[in-house]
Image (cartoon, rainbow, N blue to C red):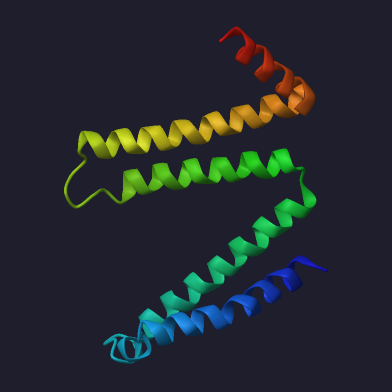
Length: 141
C-alpha cells in the first residue's frame, strides 16, 4: 500500500474516536460559537495549517519507507531538536525564562542528541556488539 493509502486509513480509523471525543466534551457548540469561524484570514490559516500537517505526515511516512531505520531515527531526533530550540527561542514563556524552564529544555535537547548518538553507535557496532558492551559494563559494576 502506498504512503497516501496508509495515511488515509489511519485518519479514517481515528475519525470515530475524534467524533466521540467531540461529543463527550461537548465541543461542537464551542466551535460554532467561535467568533472568527467565518473570517477569511482564519479559514486561510486553518487550511494552510491542515495542509502543512498533512504534508508533514506524508513526508514522515515517505522517509520511513525510503530510508533506513537509522536515518529515519536521526532525522526525527534532528526535527525534535530544531523544533524544541525554535520554540524556546521564538515563543518564550509568558512568565520569563526561569532556571527550571531552561534546565528542562537543556535536558530534553541533550536526551535527544544522546539518543541519536546511541542509535548511530548501535548501527556502527551492530546489535550483538552493543549487547556485549552492556553485559561487560554490567559485570564491571
